[in-house]
Amino acid sequence: MGLIMTLTPVTQSSQIPPALLEKIEEAITHYPVSKRSAALPLMHLWQNHFGYIDESGIEWIAAKLELQPIAILEIVTFYPWFRQTAPGKTIIRVCRTLSCAMAGSYELHDQLCKATGIDSAAGHDHGLPTSPDGKFSVEFVECLASCGTAPVCMINNDLVEKVTPADITTIVAQHS
Ligand code: FES
Image 1 (cartoon, helix red, strand yellow):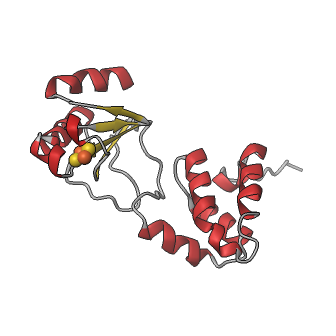
Image 2 (cartoon, helix red, strand yellow):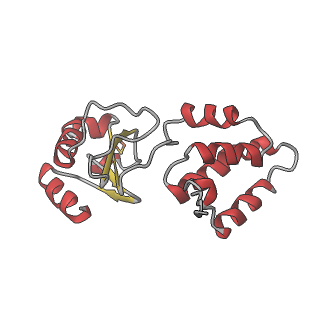
């Protein structure tokens, strides 16, 4: 008789490390009256770890908080910050608020998209516009609180100030 093997699909909820679980359990203790209030903190923890929240993550968080999955899905789809698909390895956020816009941030965004192969007109659609090779995501954000050094962008967690078109080649090369 042949051996029948069933493969368990790799989902985020099947890969929760003990450290993440510990942080989740700890976060829930801050909301003893209403577990529901822990939804946002848990979703941030989840996305910080996995980069996005997949269907299994939505279901897992909902179950943990004794909610229906739709309650978590509504939050994921409401806030542009949350993503349902994997972002690029490097996330570039371009400020588009007044000072940066006047200093050329829209052109900067177009050039970054062109240099990374991203469709600059692509919408958010519950995931960031991402390059075909999965290396970059580029998105607009509002003021990054560095208006005096416009235009500015964030490359992952680093603020980069007074970005010029000439910097784009370096930025892309450094993160490829
Ligand atoms: S307007 Fe861009 S940092 Fe404030």
